[in-house]
Length: 565
Image (cartoon, rainbow, N blue to C red; front, top):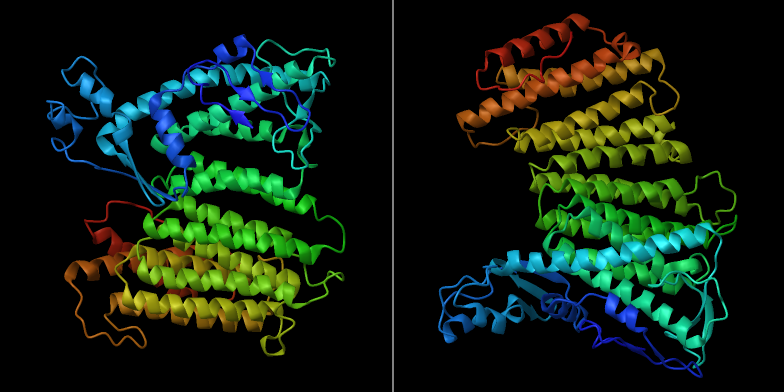
């Protein structure tokens, strides 16, 4: 047990060992090396550790100027965010800051927005002071490991049996590494406490800093170093519960950060790194030929948890590219570790189909999502990738071959994509003036052409079948769209009686014509498919008409529609 109540002031920390382990006092030079912890860091870390643990954070105005302690101290006009110390309200600030910079209600933690500049300064100064020491000791340990040195320490922290437990740990030494392994127990124990205290200080410093500056790549890198030092040489040998507890705690911190800062690239990269460690640990502990079902039982709940997080983040912070990218990472990990139908050690064939149902659910989710978030480009791109994974899984596991009514796997895939195209057509009928809906239709159309062209590493369609399939596709998703945009004809089953505004009509035409040019360009690039088109002259006329119409629109300020014929 560590009592670090005096650590910040540099007076050292007392360690009480378990069983017969003697009490140890930190060496004076080690205690003095730890810089003083600012009061702002003390207050925030206490709130983060206190029960109930915060699950949501926000930066807002927590108090009104002139109605708090500043007014009671005789100066209500001083902004609490003022970092200067020469004003007449310096005494008032000292009496109230940083305690009144935070407010915790149940699981919600608030930070006073006007105090944010001063908080960020205090957090940054504390982090850089601790980091200097942390970097030096980390480099010392790396060099020792490269030389093949081993440190053994009495692990008296958290021993459940009442006695000391010997384990190999990464020991941080402020005075340099010692090659003498016969040191006294007090000296060895002191070094171990130093490493633990320093790891905790760097975690505290980065926690505070990242809640105000969430995209500090250096701070995230130091948190990863602290996590690895916490594992020490026990990685791969420590109990699974202990390993996951270390990283699950870190995931909870990232969850808290995402409630306020959800578009920080380095925060998402850090979460991906944590997830990769968790997945690797789960897989490494379940190797062999008889544990496939166990792996699936371990990985699927993890993937579903990450997907739920991404859904919440994308709902509260729209158009979040990083959330959708992480969601794709989760399903791709699940896809890469999912066994094929041909694996003989699978006792339940439904396990193979469960991923297909899971990925099909992701595609359906995107269709529903786009009906509520008509401007979310990232969601449309994610949906296309999820659709591709769904089809790849079907091809590799022979999902279509298992269904007599679907025929071959290619016919099954075409049926799946036709259903998605039909839904995208319904979205176009409702939201034709929104570009994202047309982009979603583009992606699905491209997947359809890839299937027909055999680009999923499957058998290509016979010439007669390819002509038939392409003819149906062109009629429903090219010719009909062109007639709707250029000749004023309504799309099939379009029953809306609401007359759109002139600008909506113009936007619908621009996005629709761009969609047509894009599809025709994709078709032109596939030499094996263009030969199956029965009426190439009609396609050329449509292409030229689309380009001419877009060229006459003076409001079109981009030239992405200018495609090579």
